[in-house]
Length: 279
Image (cartoon, rainbow, N blue to C red; front, side, top):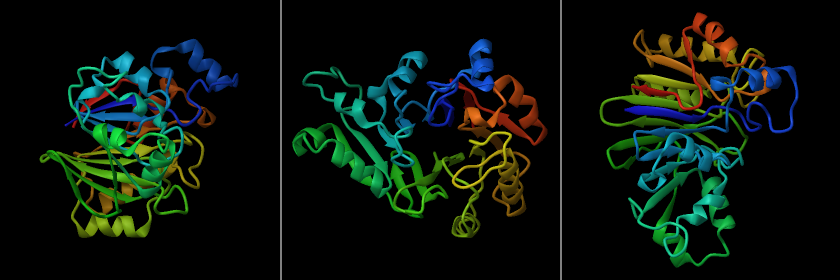
């Protein structure tokens, strides 16, 4: 399984769109891996996780054929993770010719699909259903998407359990835990992981607070470490499991160049836009 981080920032990007704080100015001056766009990831060449406002730029900078994407998983309907405007252009009558794959499955929690239906309410059902198939996912139910088995698990991000989820993704040989956006995991998540003997090969952890204490619906390095340690203790991870931090806010302080050695002390890789890993 190949995982490519297309965007690794929180909602405001880094440098943030209107910000001149020292953290944004340092990132702007350093450039390269210190520049972060809104959160999105790709698995192999046929699955996307989230569809932010920067999705088109991700396609251009990474030379991706979005028309080859078969499965689009959305974690939650917040606008930095789900900006559906560009989905309207998956219409071969005017905007998208010679599609590599005719159909795209759009899957996520109920509130995501509600947002999709509300946004595209002005279009006919025939046009929407011909090119994009929306699908509501329930937590703790495993779905088959081609060769993938995908299980949504409850995210500690909003009070509405129909609003946000994280994902367990298995391609038949490797297992990815994609834990964005979430704070410390709920007890029922830990119970599901233990009871179903989930063994993670790679864990992508929300680290929005970076060097600040994690709180609420997001993690920081401190709570990432708590989460990783608990996974090892419960047998969900072992010495071969790779942990990588992702989804950073400029308020967290450390730009990429500064964060790499800090995160490495706790055994974490630090993601950057365009980073590709073989799981």
